Amino acid sequence: MRIGIMGGTFDPIHYGHLNSADEISEIFNIDQIIFMPAFIPPHKKAEKITDIYHRLTMTVLATLSNPRFAVSTIEIERNDYSYTMDTMRELKKASGKNIKFYFIAGIDAFKEIFTWKDADRLLKSCDFIISTRPGYRIDDLSNILSNTVSKKHKNIKFKIEKKNPFCGFPGLSVIGSKYYIYPVETTLLDISSTDIRRRVAEGRTIRYLLPETVKEYIYKNKLYR
Picture 1 (tube, rainbow, N blue to C red):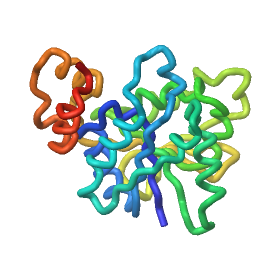
Picture 2 (picture 1 turned 90 degrees about the horizontal axis):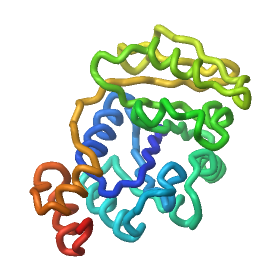
Picture 3 (picture 1 turned 180 degrees about the vertical axis):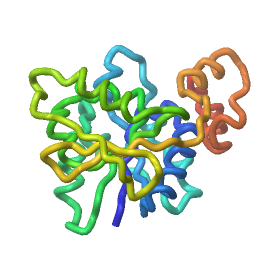
Picture 4 (picture 1 turned 90 degrees about the vertical axis):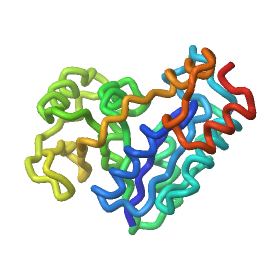
């Protein structure tokens, strides 16, 4: 069984998240995409974040109609900063041997992978699927990763693999492990949670940027005002 993990603040979740997850599940033949709202994202310590109860509820509302989508509270239950390595460790410990995990991230977030906790161990713990922009080159990612490897992570090296069993894009293998990094183009939807929050605060429409159920929840609970 293939399971994709999509973490994030989801403040709020929108069609950009949902469309990317849906296309990836189809391309990689993933059985289930699990959305994991972060309790306290380490990279957003200085930002004001909506209460986790609201973010979780919006994520559940947004994913109900897709049978491949599920929501996990594993990072919320930790009641502390949400580190991806800790999450993957818990998931693998609780899962059977026949389950294969893919961590899904956008290219902008993944380029900062070496600022994440235990990045070297994380890259050798599961496959990564990286949602990229049109015209993206695998050489660019390879060079960025190689140039940002710190002394702390000097044991991490990558190799470009021309063959990709899922799509026409080359991928990167993590040398010394059985895991790969698969860049994939998904439909570019220029939607951001930041812009949605700003629109609500300014009294502008957010229709067609996120599911109707989420829109109504935001208005009913007077979020982002």
